[in-house]
Length: 207
Image (cartoon, rainbow, N blue to C red; front, top):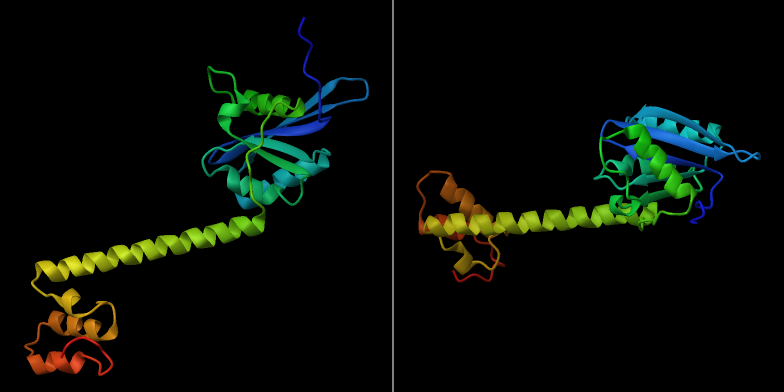
């Protein structure tokens, strides 16, 4: 006969995280072996997440588990991280939640049971400093890619308009090329001398 799972954590909480709210279930085992359950629902606004943190601490709960649902878990994790002994984030496929009609309270309780019984696998979450650095580097990469895309679009526009600046300048974003482009777009008549005046004396382009 299969034995029941052994409780690893006497007090723990399971969170069912959604975009606009979080359902929290705390289960604790008393000295007599009885399991006490309390549950509460919170909004995902910052102040309400802080209320969630305080509520967990008031119930002597320092271990929390939740699913990595989209990006919704991140604000919850950020608020609870420094106050809890562990905030475990799990891939939904590792939790094996029961199929059928969606029930937030049952899902949170199920997460709590699996976590308390040592049946969850934690996803790797880097520390706050690394997460911040990662966001900055990814943002920089995005800006660099966007700048490259805009540069290519500019060259294409010049090419289809019969302006071969990219064959004269190594970088059409430099000052000399920029002045020539502004001169062309001004709509005013211009001469070859006007164009040459835009070219810096330090420019290596043929004059």
